[in-house]
Picture: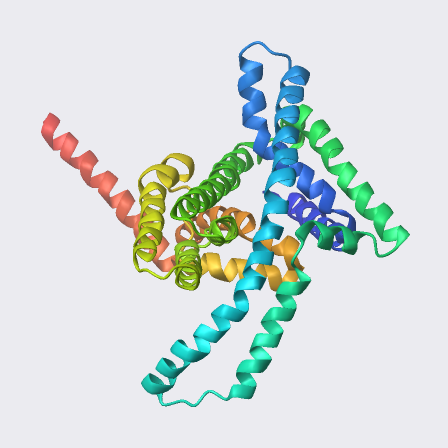
Amino acid sequence: MTELQKRWLLVLTVVTVAFVYLLLPILAPFLAGMLLAYMADPIADRLEAKGISRTGSVIIVFVGMTLLLILAVLLVLPSLGKQIETLTSLLPEGWAMLQQKVVPLIERWTGFDIDSTTAVKAKQAITGNLQQTTDVVAMLISQATKSSLSLVTWIANLALVPVVTFYLLRDWDVMVARIRDYLPRNLEPKVSLWASECDDVLGAFVRGQLTVMAALGAIYAVGLALVGLKLALLIGVLAGLASIVPYLGVIVGLGMALIAAIMQFDTWLPLVWVCVVFGIGQMLEGMVLTPNLVGDKIGLHPVVVIFAVLAGGQLFGFVGILLALPAAAVIRVLMVHLFRHYKDGPLYQNDALLDAAGDNHQSGELGSGADEDNGER
């Protein structure tokens, strides 16, 4: 990379960061559309390879995505609202059981006296938060309709997502080829290699990990429903979302399911079946879902995953949480190349070592040449 290219890269980076920072409030529909287009592009490419035009492939994929979204909105959200109502109605019974059985055990084991006033305040706080989220659909509508301006903005952003998704999906391959054509010729091979590796990692996460999360949520929800648990869908959804962090989904889901089963049933057999459901889910994840859908391309340590999610939420809120792991995966790919360059450079190996390695290499060549001459003689 020449000095001129380095300066232009620095300017372009600064301008891009400033652009994103200033326009962050209006970027949500464009980011959502880009994410949906990126996820659906391989399906459109396969349809196009079978002889369907690009526009026709995009229309087929777009209609399928729309139907899935409508089905989720009509079926999942109202059911979640009803299960939150059920959780609210079960809370007093669960709180009484907690005070009568669990709190005495904690006090006996730890020797710590739990103040009744603190317990009452905790109960009021939990009950108040649950009552505010009883109806998910009503909550979303009420937040969006607080004022006419916010309502118009909410509708406009929602309407922009399918439009942006359609046009990006239709022109995705063209845009990628055009960006590659605009790259400096001396940097194009290396940048294309890096972009290909980042695409593998992002594909493994966006298409693979999200699919694993959805599959686990469905497995847990269906399994717990077969057990007869009233909060099966709610616990399944939360466990699936928590599966973005390794092993967190099964810990959160199993803990919530066992507590709900203790509150609902009078026998121990449902608790065993709850453990069986999560055991089957973990076996399917380890032997079928993750190897086939994700593989080992992400390569992020669980601690790095937790840190990335928390850091993204701290810096950029909910959008940061959504983009934390894809960004961390891309940074990991770039850091691998940077570390490789560092290991081969003078910052890691000082000049004396590099000169010695060069001298040894030259002497080895001379020695091998002398041996060849002796052999010929």
